[in-house]
Length: 332
Image (cartoon, rainbow, N blue to C red):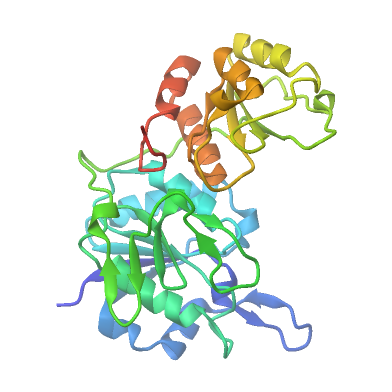
């Protein structure tokens, strides 16, 4: 008997068609194209289709994540897996957010997309989609993951690395969950094994300001609003920032005194932050700043949004930010 999966289509290149007159990509009748182009999908799984919205992924917000999470909650007892088709630009953000919102998910939640539409001849959509369906019916996977270009990656460990290549996503600080070639190789030792009851936490708060350092920058131009609850400082390398720009130390002290969280990150995508290695990072940590370890920016900012949505006290948020909630950070 075939397993049943829930297919949630949200938009993106995978479901678009090129307008003949203008040459511009526009939304297609995705379900009709799917049946026409990949009819053999229905030999793999019983597919229930839901299209809650169709949007450019750059337009997605917390509201869209909440819609997806609650749709999965409604269907969790009737399906053995979930497949979400999504635009590539914010795919890693959605996957990261859902990894926190869908706590202790007992089935696979696989996100995928494409660099070229399903309707085009040289498309990656067909292989991404078929292989993602195979992942979505796996009884070994119990987490939110991204499947792209023959690779399954933990959703909150993934980044978009390339605009033009089919190999568009990478997991810089965590090994693959699975790889598809002639055979399907699932690396069980890398998978989450969640315990506890499944629960959806859909409250999130985006009251976060982000400052990215660059040589010659002036921190005076960075003025977080009164409603800001957390500030991310993106520095260089192991976690260094200019201490002479806009009296950074005094600003951080004031932000923390005001009850704001301050998180230090690096612009470097691979490796683990070590802010105590150099003076500037060490001074910030001594004054109460957090650091993101080996979390991606996507995982860090959605984690903050998630924690700000659950808690009002900065101390509780600070304590939980350094914990692994869904495999997003390596704890040493």
